[in-house]
Amino acid sequence: MGSRKRITAALVGLVVLVLAGWLIREVGSGDAAAPAPPSSSAVPGVESGLDVRPLSQLPKEAADTWRLIQRDGPFPYPRNDGTTFQNREKLLPAKKSGYYREYTVPTPGSPDRGARRLIHGSGKELFYTGDHYASFVLVDPTR
Image (tube, rainbow, N blue to C red):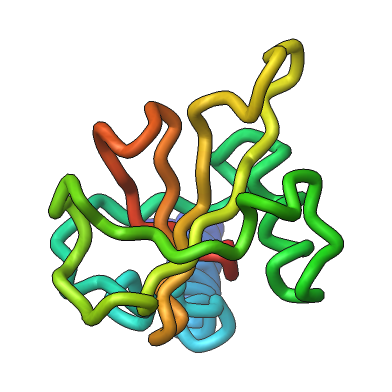
């Protein structure tokens, strides 16, 4: 093998080693630098067994209602919002009376309160129904 071929082979080998080292470093540091996605087990109410849905995936009005809940109002339906949710459908975990409070999630164009609600538990759980209590999802308000 001529000296020119040996030099070329050595340079190609060096480039391959440098690239391999760079890839290994990027993969290794990428794991440490990337934040871990929020764990759904950290969401209050996960023991309900309901699907967890990020607040950002619910209708925009749900996020607006959540902000009102955090500020304690004022609510668009003061006679109804913040009242005890009875859980008559038994779709949420059984708790003592007064544990859950319900809040209207306005439906644009609806002539009344509509069917959408947020249910907030004393243990910081947040549930959403878009069909007037026929079904619920657990809401992760941090996402």
